Length: 200
Image 1 (tube, rainbow, N blue to C red):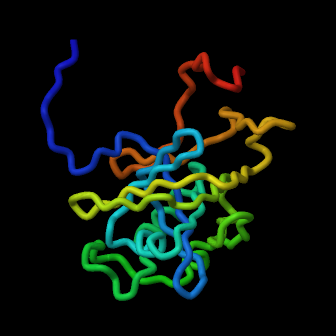
Image 2 (image 1 turned 180 degrees about the vertical axis):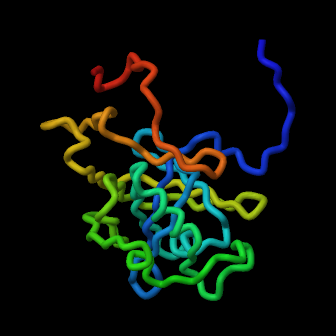
Image 3 (image 1 turned 135 degrees about the vertical axis):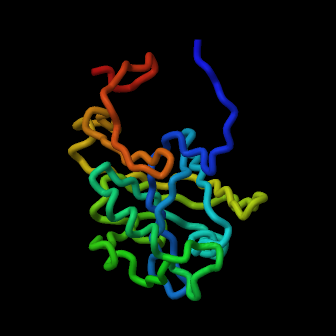
C-alpha cells in the first residue's frame, strides 16, 4: 500500500507540455512567451498565464495567438525565452533576472513564419503551430489568468504526420514536458488507448 503524505508544493506541474505563445505587440511585431500550463479539448485551448505578463496584455487588446509546440530538443531556447519579457519596464512580479527583449526571435535564433488565419507569426523552427483566437480572458485570484481560445488552423511538420492523413504519428512526436520546473521528453510507450486513431 502507498504511504501518502500531505505536502504544500510551490507548483503543481506534474508533467505538462511546454508551448511557446505568439501574440501581437502594439507596434504589430510578434511577442514570444513560453508557457507550461496548456491543454486542449477538441478545438478548445486553455492556457494558464501570469496576469502581469506581456502575453496577457496583448491578448486583451488583440485576441489572436499561435500556440507553437516545441519538441524535446528545444528546451534551452525555451529556457532562454523564460528569462525575458516583452514588457518595458519589466513588471515587478517577474523574477529579478528577467530582461526586456523586443525581438525574441533574434534572442533565441528562431525565425518568424507568417500565420494563415491570425496576425501573430509562427516559429519556423518548431514542429507544431496551432493558430487560434481567444474567446475569454478570465482573471483569477493570485495574479493568474485563464485564457480560452478556439483553434483556427493547425500546421505540423510533415515527417511527424502519417502520409495522406491528418493524424500525428505518436512514435515520431516528442513533445517537451515540464515537470516541477525540469524539462523532459517522453519515456517508453506503455500502451495504446482503445480510442487512439493510430494503432501501431
